[in-house]
Length: 148
Image (tube, rainbow, N blue to C red; front, top):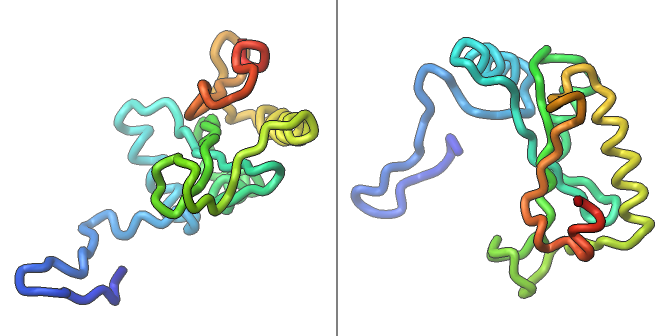
């Protein structure tokens, strides 16, 4: 943060970015710049973290804007970050802020959302099938039935 202040002698604050500027994916020009850099350096696409909590999505603005605007024209895929959000960011069960749920209704709603995202012409495919990563596949109940 630009307004950060040092808390003690030798504390290096604020950290200001170099020539590339701040990495703020809310800004379309930053997303376009990142895609241009990635393309020049042989990156095939971006993997966006996807947060889904029983139908509630969070931190979804950059991906939604990429889908809505069609820019940048750069391939992408989703990675479902399927763990509870906890105050300590440890995937534990203490001080859960947002809880994962895997019921049949949530699965159907989630799948409908994903099918729509998979329809985007930029969505990365392997052998014609959309690439979809799951952060903690072992956390899924019936993982082999759902993913296998």
